[in-house]
Amino acid sequence: MSVSLRGVEKAFAARSAAPIPVLHGIDLEVPDGEMIVIVGPSGSGKTTLLRCIAGLEELDRGSVLVGGRDVTHDDPGERDIAMVFQELALYPHLTVRANIAFGLKARKSPPAEVAVAVADVARTLELEPLLGRLPSELSGGERQRVALARAIVRDPTAFLLDEPLSNLDPALRTRARVEIRTLQRDLGRTAIYVTHDQVEAMTLGDRIAVLRNGRVEQVGAPLELYDHPASAFVGRFLGTPPMSILSSEVLTPDRRKAAAFGIRPERVRLADADGDVKATVEVVEHIGSSTVVHLRTSHGELLARTPGRDVPQPGETVMVSFADRDIRFFESEDGRAVTP
Image 1 (spheres, rainbow, N blue to C red):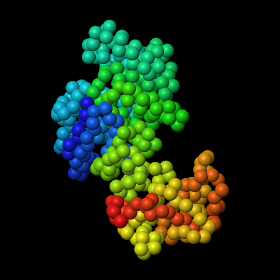
Image 2 (image 1 turned 90 degrees about the vertical axis):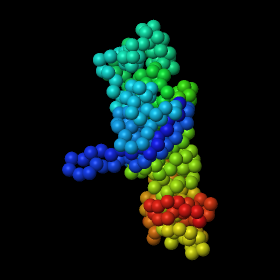
Image 3 (image 1 turned 180 degrees about the horizontal axis):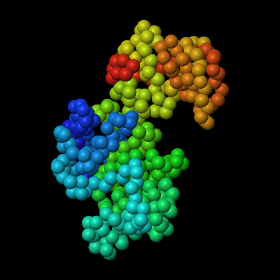
Image 4 (image 1 turned 180 degrees about the vertical axis):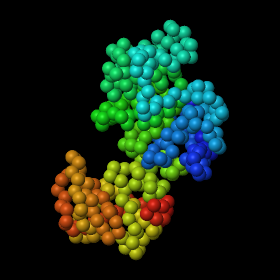
């Protein structure tokens, strides 16, 4: 089912001061069956927003709708939403089978139905050999799959996932991303996934919502946000390495359209002579199939990502250039995008 947020506001009380606002009028529409990923730096309000959707935090203003039904004042158990936390919170004294079945038993589902449901989800997530084990006997990836199974077995209308992969090593994270995305598509359930990892955001989401200081900065398809950031903040936040933002004074007068401009590192071309900007090489990072060159210009740092390893070395002076179509203009070095 769809999930709708309308004017959601939340503030937390402070001991000796006015309440501290965390969410500022969040509006967001998540269609049925979509996976949307919410990203943003620490403290931007991502987890608080999930907790408001789940009913674990009471809204100060606004409403939450699930499948068109207003659940703003419903208890968490009445919303038919499953949440997977960063800390997986498995019951250490219960087996994998009992952990998965716990929610169904709490709802007093018939034992035969519980057994069938647990067997089905265990088969889907390849947990059948682990059903008799305790959480302490599982690897991090296995515990993560058990937490997902416990959420899935309830067959909820929507899933909320709060950085469920953050405690896994890089190799496991890559595999788990694929498993989560495949599973969500197979189930056809709406999912809202919170992370600060932009790689997860770009690979998992049908759409991405970027949060900044409790406000939605931009919502759209991953490549839309990557190619056409609505602000310099989004340009810097999405992308590895990030978009470089420089003063537009670095451009010739006939190309100066705004106070600042952004360019993706893979769109920066290194040249020996002719070019748009003179720069000094500061650091060279070899990352396998490509190389990231950190350049210092008179108007700020510029990153260039180039294939291969044959690049200028630290201390050398180079000229760099970029095509007009690859430049994004902004009101300031931290401002909104503008049309040149």
